[in-house]
Amino acid sequence: MTTSFLDRAHAVLRDTPVADGHNDLPSAMRTKAGYDLDAVDLAMDQSALLHTDLDRLRTGGVGAQFWSVYVPCHLAGDAAISATLEQIDFVRTLIARFPDRLQFASTADDMEAARAAGRIASLMGAEGGHSINSSLATLRALHQLGVRYMTLTHNENVPWADSATDEPKAGGLTAFGTEVVREMNRVGMLVDLSHVSTDTMRAAIAVSEAPVLFTHSCARALCDHPRNIPDDVLATLPANGGVAMATFVGYFLLPAAKAWAEEADENGRAHGFHRLDRSPEATACRQAFQADHPRPHVTTATVADHLDHMREVVGIDHIGLGGDYDGTNYLPADLSDVSGYPNLIAELLTRGWSEPDLGKLTWHNAVRALRDAEDVAKSLQRTRRPSTATLDQLDGSVR
Image (cartoon, rainbow, N blue to C red; front, top):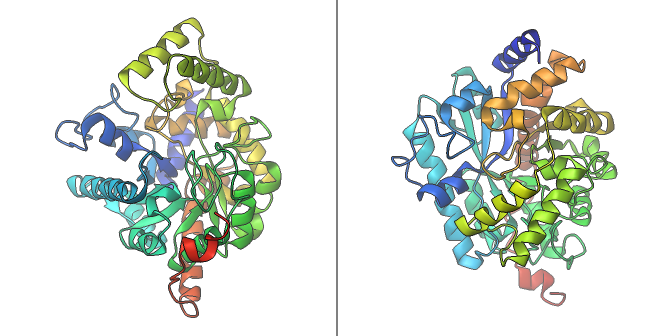
């Protein structure tokens, strides 16, 4: 990449920084440091441990971050809710620790105010409907605490929605799942469709009165992974107002990388490890496999290929970025941490993307989607009361 394109990329990001849809730093801090910000000082270089720290966020031109308050699917019921609250508490604590660098945000206006102040707008998204334990009151409570999107599922189904990586049971959304989407619209919480099945994507978009997000997914036409978005679903986003945020996870980007990951997962299972096991023993097993079977090379150009395709299908007003940093161990070499966004912007500049279009990709589309969801919520709250529906009432006879 020539210096001139990188210089232009940095200039773009100074004007319209990245509003990234998904970063798993809270979960990484839970597992690696017990949330201890004294043990892991994010004002210092943490490149040996994490993809994310404050200096690298600044170098990368990040101006807003949706911090994922993710908890694993094996936590169910009240345990999932408690763990989600701990994640929220960590994000709040992180912002309070670094008030000169981070600024809490829950609205589009808050995002713009943080940008004007030179701070990183810090929002939250819950990754998986298991975090609400099928309770609309819990959904509302998370919104009141600042959670501004919820991914309907993670890697496993919830009782009311199907995941992309589980055996389908609901056929998309159940009646209660439809009510979840309606209530998210009413309170102003964005519906995130990364991780959900194709049927769930279609059902949620059909129901939602507000823009939806795909906070960290790529184009299925380029890499046939169930976590990616089919073209027919992408094509529905202009009418909905939604935004598809391309992610940097290697096995969502390149078919050869997907095949490698499947082989690595099978090797792990043969040694007694679940594919999401991050224990030292499972990590060592995966590293041994990788030593004998090198991972396919993924670059910023691979990500740019997905963005080119997504823009062609859905238009420039409906795409964004969601790196999934600290939530994956397979990233392009030149996007290996949060400082890498300028490399991607420079690559897109070499492909003829205009600076106004890049500003939509990095900042304006995400802000607009949140603002539109706020406007929908204000309208719905004039005519619709908080839902008291329960899973048993709506789905009891079909579960």
